[in-house]
Image 1 (cartoon, rainbow, N blue to C red):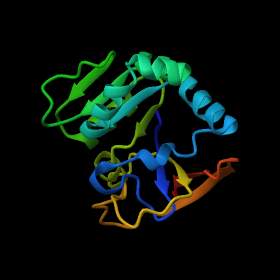
Image 2 (image 1 turned 90 degrees about the vertical axis):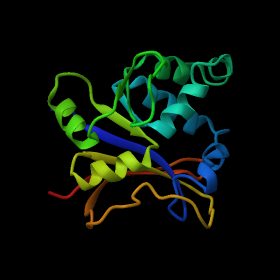
Image 3 (image 1 turned 120 degrees about the vertical axis):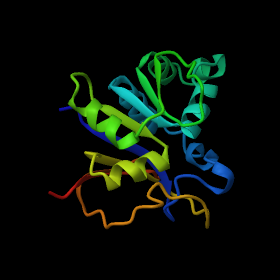
Length: 188
């Protein structure tokens, strides 16, 4: 069965997006060779990318551009090459390369996709999707990068979760730029 992983960056006070969806804070520590090597290696891992509409539109507006190819060629090449799924009730089409648009029930579709053969899936951003899939018990691993910045307000990726999610830590890694990767799996 395919695995579904969430990979998100959050602030020290727990927000994955600031007011008005701002995520510029997530890139303030990008001038770190160890961090850049980690993100490039993650991109090379492959798999299928899963997005909600807002994250999809943000990613699709950047990764296919010449600026992305210049600034981060390894990640840009992978982001454009990998298969992608965007969940949206409002989009009419998904024009970014290798993207499938799904308008139906997120949990039912992910449950079906997990049973198909293929590489594992990764969700970036997409807090509404994370919240729904976490409640449905469909997320196999949470990879959370805590960025050492405090916003004071914003959105958490678990908004709307109604039941306690109990997780067990599986690994941590601290980077020279202050970012800390924390990985968790649901407790059985």
